[in-house]
Length: 286
Length: 308
Image 1 (cartoon, rainbow over the protein chains, first blue to last red):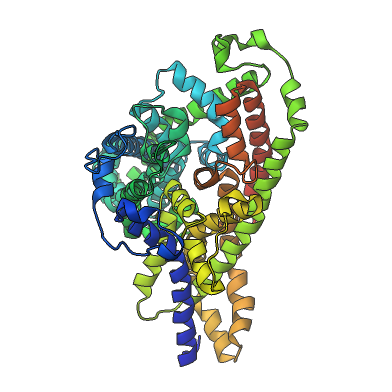
Image 2 (cartoon, helix red, strand yellow):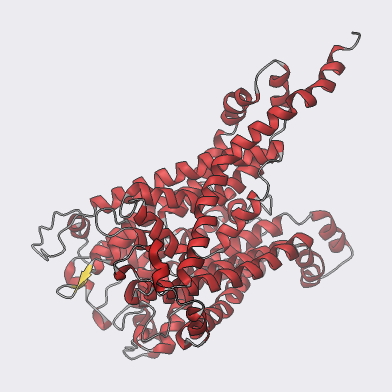
């Protein structure tokens, strides 16, 4: 494209216009999270875009230290939902990574796995809602309802397509010469996989794991169906932060939303190169 | 033995053939078992439950649901369920509004970002922020924005010059508009990301040749760049169509499908029947019908994409 001044001005103007609109919701949530109660409800002419008296009260409130002596009915700390989200997402990521990586290696090197690639794409295409009835029955039967490990198990299965396809494209790109050299030296295939291939793949493993973690962390529907009380995750807990007595707890919800949004945003920006591969199932190798 | 290495190389495949097969089997086994665990058994169970009138409140365990056998009656009901059909239609409408807008915005942004300029990295990362916000949180953000005393009306008041108090989420048409806006906000960055990756991978030499021949920019774009991006455009649109069909989180948090059934998409409908009416036999029939529709559509789509 020819570089002219007007073109550059148009470029920046267009990008900044888009960003200005696109950032409003995020900025509003950040500002909400730091507003005192008096400013939550302000609207119309009183609507404040930026907190006039910034406070950490909302964060104190969701962690159970409600010095604002406000609402005893909802006094349940957000600590446990955060723990539930962390446990379910982390262990779900581990299940997806272990099963997905080994299957990807099996397929990439030995062509085993049969219909697995297609089955995994299908798994992603189907709405989770469409298999939830049998899953709820199975989970109840196995005593996995309202446990973090029950949630981790289903997260592992649901996100495995991504770890599988990401790792498969990475394995396909890895030259075989190094592995072959070790084989000639007398290493068994297993040893080569565990001691040579996997350590070489460390960066790929890390970015795939982050990607899968973001997906698990973002879930709302599955946790809504499979947890009831003890192990509700952040999004489920957030939705419950309102009552007929108190109405919507805007500030508290915004504070919790901010906490929930931070890890994926940081991780996502760190691995943006892999995002395309992951989301397109490696169909487009960047 | 004159040539040791040649001998080794010739021997290796035979020696390791069985070993490779065994290793491949063990490596893929966990994934196979997990897929089986979530696919075969649940779907058989789904078929079984869908032929009964079973509900978890009946007091009989699911494996004795045959006591409530009603055959294909659930499916007959389904064909005459206006709420199901309207939810299906609404899901389609949402898709028809969301995906093209996301595509055009994403394509426009990708064009702006394809060559280097100052501040590209920072602006690029900032554009990606919405797609990384947890969808449930995004739903809550838009719930706040669209309150009658909220920021959206506040901005509109500035332009109108008088206080605007539209109850966005209480009006059926406006509520549908609001949830569509939230979907566009969240997933335009994904379109942008995929399309930009595709655009960058279009080889430069042909474009250079066209520049030398004096082809104008739009001409180069439509005759060289866009046709080369065919596959990635199909993939990007397919991803959004699939994900849009499943949409639940932000819609449900913003409106719970309301007012009335104005924003009730297929996932929200199934969820509500599961939770509120608790006729799981019927839900299983709905879910199975959707699985069948999607299986056929996706099998055709994957076949098409492989040929493309």
